[in-house]
Length: 361
Image (cartoon, rainbow, N blue to C red; front, side, top):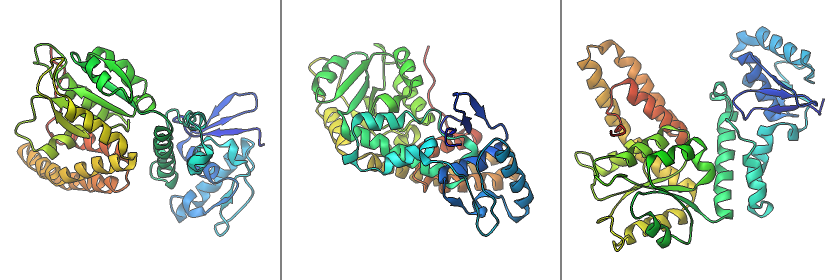
């Protein structure tokens, strides 16, 4: 049975047969059970991780029977012993990812890290989020992304319409890519920014009239995705009617740096220094700052949401809102920046919090 491969990093739980034919599990509960067994194979999994509660035992036995009927080697067990899947860990893409992350830097090259990261396609299916393996897999990917950054020259995406070539010259110690407008940005965004870049430097205005706020649209699009990449915003027009911390948290920015103008002779020392400092820091430190900024805004988000519900005549929904706000707090302490951003945006949309700017024109 070792010829079978189990894949859980492409949005589904799939058996890959020796002839390379994919056999996805359709039932969510069967898929969840197999994922848990596969991530611990060939070791035993406590029955408490496999059942919903003690009343789920008959249903668990039925799930295990269906998995055995697919040809999987799951020896008989019981509530005391737990259950296990007889399978080599190298036959599970999730275990391969975790093993690669646990290996030390001396055991890796840029090629081996890149190969390990290719195992992650769409990531684990969302129904695994309540399980222990969700955080384990995301943590492993984060460590590998950080390690890849240490093993190669840092890559910076610059989104700037006028002085991009000068910025590339000043930041020549890094591997810089320049796009000059929002239309050029979208294909890169769809292709997975954190796979190609280590940071984004974006100008707030990307038109000669300076009437647009396309840079903020880009920052918000990155924030709303599950991309884990720091964004630095350049502007000569700092935010008004909002504190610096609130502005950073709203768009999940690493920082906002000022510039005087867009002439070829302008002084961009502050911008260059910020990028250098950013790349000197480790990725965990960057993420911790971003999570901390969001945590500072959570009390104000609750206050605004409560006020909005009252104005809408929906006082009866306040208790539900507060439970969802508590969930935001819990997510913020899991150290998963992408999940926190996603939850933050869901809450803001649901309770009328001010949204980002839209593309002008």
